[in-house]
Length: 226
Length: 360
Image (tube, rainbow over all chains, first blue to last red):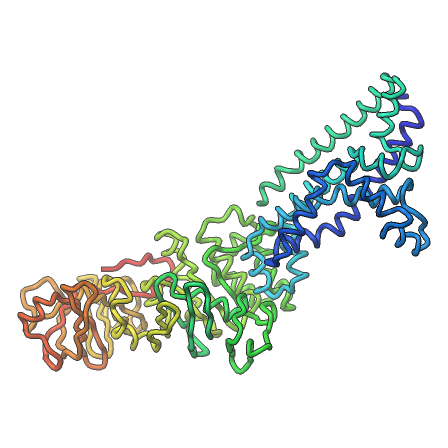
């Protein structure tokens, strides 16, 4: 057995977290990226900067603010309490919310770039051929931006898997609930269990390698279609 | 319509015929494309009025969105969807107008434009000319009520242009919907259009039937090399021994190289002003075959200060002759004067498919 039961639990939790976050961000990030790519509004620049903020902010700063927001006196905390969900910190859904903020730019930016790369004439052509805006979006913009979607999903998933600071601030380190693989690895190192750390790290490296390999394998096809 | 932009204003009122090919002609930057985009609804200019065959597309706050106007639009650059093959591109608009896949009208368009061998092809494996043909087919397959073409040949080299022009001739002959064709190339327009609107710096300078407008075009607006008239002619006879064809037009007949167009066919003939010279007597002992009597009706400046354009009436037709001011003075050319127009070369427009445009 390469990994211990605890390790598997952490890996499984990480995979679940990253999948949920990627899925939600795909739903939320697509319209946001589309808006950012097409709008001429003066809000474009400030909003774009807000989306990009997690790229430059230390994760612990982000985690700190999120912790306050999710606390009993924070806006998110009041909302979740009012909805009968209880408080989010130190729970799986708390991690999800934190990761949504942290990983947002990794979803939105590749999508925005992909949408911006589709020349306006293609969408005009779709409209002229009778496609209503939503129809044109689904049948022209999305298929043409497919490589961007692939990149966005992979980047978001990978960054969610790799986050550490935010998770530590929001989730603590509760086995089975918030102890993701990166925290598990940290614990191994702290406990000087280098062999276990090596094994977990190897699993993570292999995973990352396979993901990138898959992306590159899919890429040429996407490129040809450009 | 009226449009103000930094450094550019457009103030255009035009009423175009509801059939045939109307051409919007003008130098680049004159607002041709903007007019077309406003018509299509791609650009919304507040305060404009756009009516199409009794339907108001834009008036005040009323604005019919692009996808409900039923317009076919061919861009300068063919915007074929790269994720679809040729067939799916052609069917994209057709499907949205409730037409079945195997619709007869679509088949006809495919045949008209010779698209059958391309249907299975991916759009990135098409040449420039093929791309434009597919783009035209795609626009037509959606059975539009109006076809707008924005310099569809501008990005093609001369060879590709000559490949695609015969297809445009076919459209001109077979389509029942009106076509508005934007170009800065008088060659194309002389061949394809019936109605001409001349646009300059956002203003309509002249408009009317092609045959009537051409002899009166403001020469400062175009390259002096371009001044020409277009005549509607009929192939009256073919002389096989000399490989010549006699073309009759309202006001005379011309001998031109025989391009195999059968006797009785109607075709357009373009006479460039620089290929027409004037003489006081009929030219004898000259290599010029076509020497026709006419009367001077007007003289206008000819672009270069040393040149002028003389309008010569031949029966019901008007010709332009480019002569130097010096010749004009030495010959004493004035309106009302009778003289001979010597036509050095005749360009046949509207060639049947497959024959390259051989001129001169």
